[in-house]
Length: 387
Image (cartoon, rainbow, N blue to C red; front, side, top):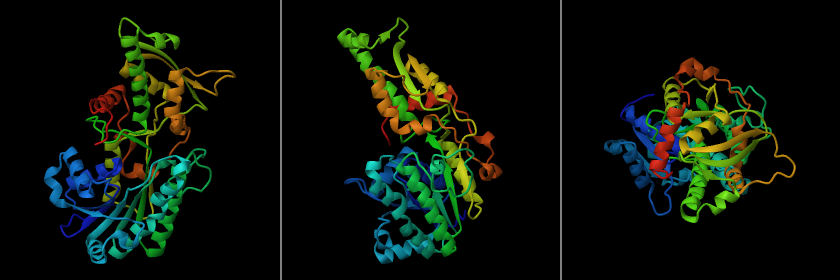
């Protein structure tokens, strides 16, 4: 990427998990970055970005970040026309990372606005700026409910696990058609499920993998409080007890519809892969940023038991037997896990041919218990709160 002082990378989604890490990486490489985004409540975008720069230890680089409070659904991205034209004149490449990652059908309209209807606005800016590239951050799960392998090409619009997958697949089609029409070189990056930094354990977002561990953490806290303050009456009703070694035994049956695994990558690997792609992009290429060795839920259950000092998690392939009644803990855990069930026992395999040419799989750290513990220790230390 051109690092000239007069040109900047325009980035959306910089207040999110992946976008903030991309912002930090670009700054460390010497780029200037224009951030398009929205305020949050009464907090201006500039203030939100300043806090993130502090979190990344990049407070000294604020002079290389420019923020513009924008609305991609409005003409000129919601900016005054002179400001819009000025940003276009100084944009070299565009990275579109902003998206609505909610799964709920209830939020379909808002999710569609963020993931599909906002695209013409950012693509218009890219065209007007004569940017050398448009980079779109998608998801590996645009394949929907598909049989493996999932190829690094535009997916067919079929059945999807949720509205997020569906709208991201539709968005890829919009990007491909518009970029072809306007003569804009583009790439599409498809990460799988991303967790914290494998080296430091730090994270400024605690969704996906963290949701499962946090759920178990709070279930344990509920029973521990009952045992310590109420003599364990409720715990005994659910056959929960604390042994002399401090291990809490909680019978927890987790039913998965099929065998499979969960495809996880650390955010440092996502960033390293993205930088490789940005360094030498190939027009029209799609890149799966995924693991070739996903973890099974049984492996992750063992990690959770070790970390939380609990016993009793049983991962069962199949539906609950007739007449099965969930315990209060099982019902609570199932409620927390329900949106993620399609990803917990996933049989999809992701072709990585394009990514492997520039960044081979040995560069991907395996999710060992040591890395898992490092990430979860950090999450607990900040009380599972986003930066």
